[in-house]
Length: 431
Ligand SMILES: Cc1ncc(COP(=O)(O)O)c(C=O)c1O
Image (tube, rainbow, N blue to C red; front, side, top):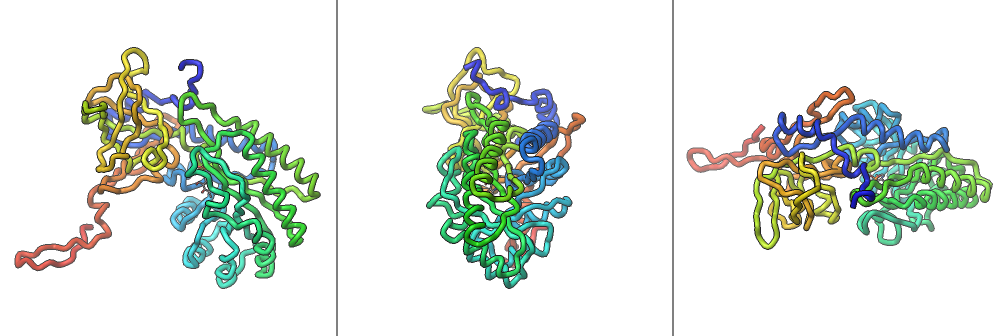
């Protein structure tokens, strides 16, 4: 396999992880600040080379830890938020950006408008009456469903007939006309059509399609689109044999699409925006668990103290994550094992039939690409607790940026019936 191994997939800050496991109880996440900054700069600067006014946003949903958001915002990224909490934390950190809800309630719109700092991106024409009631903003964008889609797996295809997102093309001109009649003065367009795309030609195709729609809106409604957001979805390799997305080729392709379509339709070039999550954060984080049980059954099951509640992607999407046994290189004697967590779910398996160096109880296993859509998707099923998060700063200092949950955290909001001495129950909060 050597020669085809992608160093980005197998990269580990080994010394830092070894330091961390000596200091902190497992399981935990570790992130590397330097890598986050490098990913931000690579993305921002590659697009700025071709689009000097390029305006990058970061998809907050990929990883919402405030300390990490602060780093990303300090690299010149705005926020792509899609829930009240994401809008709230962005504002608390002094950020601003675009708000893309879907099936949004009036209360949610109200919250975001009150929070301030966000341009609204509507998912459907049917939301306009709510916007009218709340007061039309000066700028409004629509998320369209342009028909084309791609993704790392079927469940990550986010446009086309089966997708719940975006204004259908037949409504698009009417949507902009109606928005204008409410008093909106300036307009944007947005699409988010798929996630974890590694095809370098895809983003140019999305841009070309959006520019065709921009021309149609201009022709049918006489509206000029100022901002064009091609969404996120920039893939990262999860398997060592996968190639990284060639961002330079992506940006160049989008530039060519802009040149060709703007000339073809005679439209003014909109400001380009994008809102990556995964390609900023995925390879900057690792989940570390300790081996507690090795069961030799029909297969060998290696049980660690982390689980699908920490990183649900393998359970939800059957997604592949590289696993390293800390301090044991993948050479010499290897054994086929399943790496599993402690939840009462048979899909609580991080890796199936994976060749790993011979593992012993007490070894530490590192799950790679755990920086994006990992902790952010963590949950409490089986009343398992969310793990702590640590950051290795640029200066080499290790900081705790979120403590691990406690059992009390889990029941903080519950009324706990209390059995009094006489056997009657009363309600008491644990906090
Ligand atoms: C609207 C929107 N924008 C951006 C993203 C970020 O996608 P990715 O992490 O694949 O870049 C998502 C992810 O689901 C999304 O729904």
